[in-house]
Length: 230
Image (cartoon, rainbow, N blue to C red; front, side, top):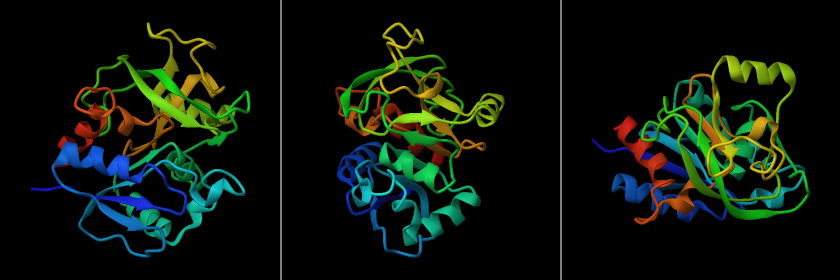
């Protein structure tokens, strides 16, 4: 049995090939590269990945125009039927703009582009995306964004906590939560969130950049997905 993965490519995507390599290494299968103007999602696709980049130059807001691309209608429909979707960095922004994940991504607190390694705490290993991690495991993954400051209102935040939808939080190397470990001002150090059914994940860090043979922290996410869905 094989897993057919589709990586969606928008104008301004710049991490699609990196994601494709990480997926191929994990699954042994080259993913389908799907152009944003497509209106149909092939029925055999069992996972969609929205990669990082600066879609449409981030005009209006990061991810706002991409969320209205033709292919997103098909993704929204299939996601409602349980299709797993992974959004990385700009892909996370697209998912919030499309209403597939709660919250919004604002400008970083200090209004600077950030590109560095950060520590993350795995808040839940009980998902398709994280089953190869351990609860509360500290991992190191790169970030590269200007608009990664996760915001959600108080009611939405309470729902996130009640439904255990927080996937990853920024932390220090020893796992402590602090302002110093929060690179962009995200509420309560949130770096990634699940949908309520945990079949959609958005995160700002780039696991595909930590998926080489010598780097396991990001590779485990792709391995989790492939093994869970096969």
